[in-house]
Image (cartoon, rainbow, N blue to C red; front, top):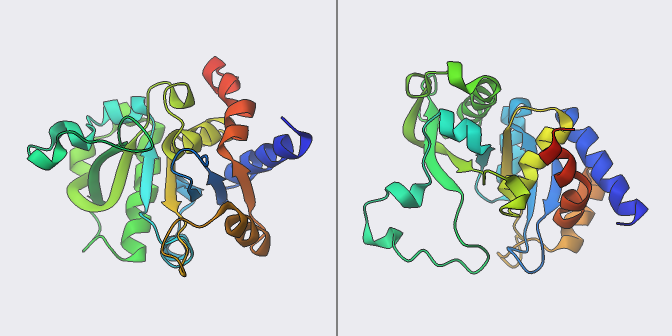
Length: 226
């Protein structure tokens, strides 16, 4: 890995440690998407507005497998009793990470920037000590925040934004709850290109990093607990 790539990963970790967003591109031969990623505990209503307006994809909270297990959160495909859930062929992976959708019980409709920020930050708080949380008492489903359940071995098992975000969280000492939102191109309607995503990062003084560099720099350290 080049020094520039290693430096980008280091800056991304430091940004996540400070509670700042970063941009992560997974891979050209996977989704080929760049996600705007935040530590869930740092998400404010303004951050939700930024994801709506500047990114445009789904606002999701990625949770580690152990946290999802403590909350009894299934993969959505496994619990949907509908023919549409069968033969879930994906061009970029073997399965989706989607679990249930939730609102915090203190929200009203759940969709406003204030409501979604509340749900997201409470999820981050719950992820710190998941065994002590009455998940159903604090959150209701369905809701307006999509939950993602990471693969148990993170990027050793799957190299999606869900896992990449949680590798960054672990390296930064953040709780295993990260917000991911795909960046879309207003002109084409497709995924924002890496070139355009880099330009956005430069304009807003944010870190852009490639998923392969996150994996190369951090996966071994995270797996060993360093």
